[in-house]
Amino acid sequence: MDFDLFVIGGGSAGVRCARISAGYGAKVGIAEERHWGGTCVNIGCVPKKLLVQAGEYGGWAEDAAGFGWTIQKGPHDWGKLIAAKDREITRLEGIYRKLLTGAGATVFDGRAVFVDAHTVEVGGKRVTAKNIVIATGGHPERPDLPGAELGIVSDDAFYLKTMPKRLAIVGSGYIAVEFAGIFRALGAEVHLVYRQPLPLRGFDDDLREAMAEALTAQGIVLHPGCLPKKVEANGDRRILTFGDNETIDTDLVFFATGRHANVKGLGLEKAGVELNAKDAIKVDDGLHTTQPHIYAMGDVTDRVNLTPVATAEGHALADTLFGGNPRGISLRNVPSAVFTTPPVATVGLTEAQAAALGPVDVYVTRFTPMRHNLSGRARRSLMKLVVDKATQKVVGAHMLGEDAPEIIQGIAIAVVMGATKADFDRTIGIHPTAAEEFVTLRTRTRTTDLAQAAE
Ligand code: NDP
Image (cartoon, rainbow, N blue to C red; front, side, top):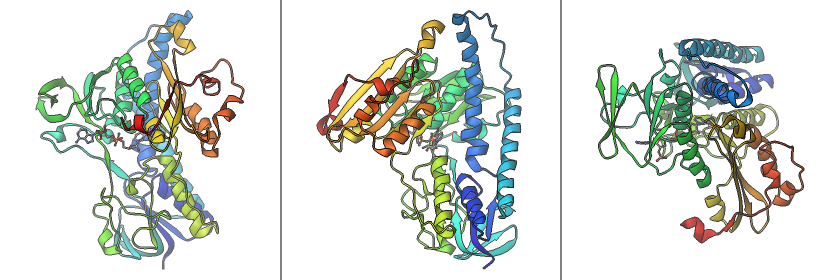
């Protein structure tokens, strides 16, 4: 065999797995056809957060007046922002590549496809490997409707030549609400068209209501309970028809309607690797595919599609195969955040999920952050704890508000450790912060049981 490990895909999962394995002395090859660092670094989390931060400056400039500043907010230069973002991404991509070569991995710039269960072809060359990892990620997909090709997807949003003045975003998952916030904060008129009554299906219901309120407060026009029907072009303009034949005449239609695993054209059938019902690669808890020496990880398995999960999987497999430390990772209590303005962050179970397992005590607080009593901005935070009634363990913590991702990361440690409400209560707060609310919630809002959860 040419390699102990060959990794297909140089994103979060693949790079981590290759780098750590090579560090253990394994002979590692890794192929990437597009950009090192994958979705997260190039067309996902990282550039998205830079765009969110760009929008925040506009808000800060407006809010400063309440604190005595006279700031004239000038126009925003989209081209300058995208150029700065591109420079940063190029820098990061270089670092990812260097990490691999520095660790001793052999890097292939090209698409790798299976020839058989131990052989891949990359750049016209055949290489063999004892173990193979598929970490090819996913891609955004447009819904199946007339004119869908006239709309953009998130990959395109990072490279728009000009800032749209008006746009309609379809969907209400992570990507839809994040980009709605970005474009609105940069001055666009934004419509969000989605089929659920509230955005962010799967999140806690109180959080979803608070999110709808926050999006509205930001000036985003919500169209809940609406299915998109078609997109038509009128010169450079786009007409989105949705719901009961309502229309939006706009500069841009943006489909944020979900992502799918990158499995096409990899020759999986030649390797004996099977897909699951979602057309993603089927894996067991040890990340084995249906072929025991071939593993898959990250978005291509469509389980918990988050970068830190992918990197944790990559690291765990490297430790298992070459580090003498066989281990898996837990997909329970994975914290996550949605970078809207203000953001949302969450760890553990929603109230409904927890109540389906047994009665829960629920603590909710809503308040205007201190800063906005002076800034005058209409912005309210929500913080919520879901506590198992029998054990008093905190099984869910949810927040919408400024710094929520920074706060919930710490709370997540307590939840993962199995902290009880009493542990939260005996922790002294840091004053004055929003975070201290999590340790000063004394009045139970309600108790929810199975029957109420079912409603
Ligand atoms: P999601 O699956 O989260 O959301 C897809 C949205 O599109 C939902 O609102 C869904 O509606 C809607 N939708 C799907 N199909 C159709 C259709 N045919 N017509 C109308 N609406 C439709 O996908 P995203 O693309 O937002 O994100 C993909 C994944 O990427 C996330 O699940 C997340 O794991 C990851 N991600 C994480 C981020 C973070 O951590 N901050 C940021 C961005 C992405 P419905 O709810 O009714 O199904």
